[in-house]
Image 1 (cartoon, rainbow, N blue to C red):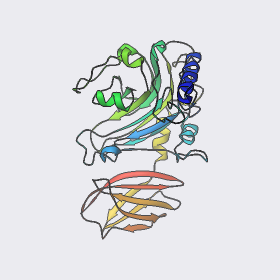
Image 2 (image 1 turned 90 degrees about the vertical axis):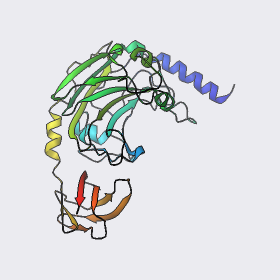
Image 3 (image 1 turned 120 degrees about the horizontal axis):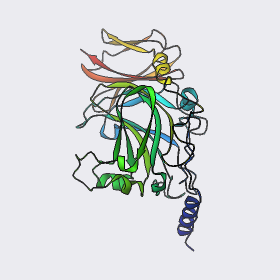
Image 4 (image 1 turned 60 degrees about the horizontal axis):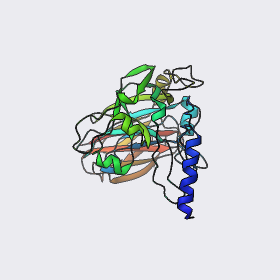
Length: 319
């Protein structure tokens, strides 16, 4: 038998055998969706943004991402927050649409060891999704259907609205609660239809350029089954959104074509990025040290600072 066909058959059997979505309570970086295939790559949290179109939006994490096994792992953030939390900075730069960031997980995982494309799974039996979160910004829960289908929909994927809630809230959403916004001119699809070929669940914030806010996702599970997402979580709470805000103390100050910072206690790298997404200046800072920008033209830029104890970005104007 062809190796790829055999692998696919094994994956199908494994998916069928794992029918239960184990409610995630902000403890590990992997959500046990019950649809994971033989690659064991499904359920891991990831973040994404508008950088493909040269947007500069990002999530500022309370602690640096990464472990010795995976530099993009969100496990350190989850350990700190009791969930996935951060500070959102939306920067549209040259975008023709409102900037966005998102946090999500694939429900099945990669198609095979050779094919890294995320596979689709039938999540109909979940009945929908239950999510516990805090957010100072309105968000949506989006059903990701893979690059090919998303493009055919013109990225007008089915979504369900998540209102602002700085104190924390639980939202139970049936598949019927998900619908396309209607602005796309591509294919049409309903929430239940999307659930039958689901690739990813995504918490997404899209708003006007310059919007900032905090969020914490502290539980997620299937609408049908036990334990319910609305049960008392073992870790995380809406209060974590306030704790993160207090932890962010870095400030950037521009004067006389120099940029200086406060709140940085160790060596950190600095990048100055123009509206086309190109890095025009790099340097290192620590404490009250400043970076000379005399060779940088006047205009609007994004500054990004990263180091062992800092992950910060902000928009600056050079005159």
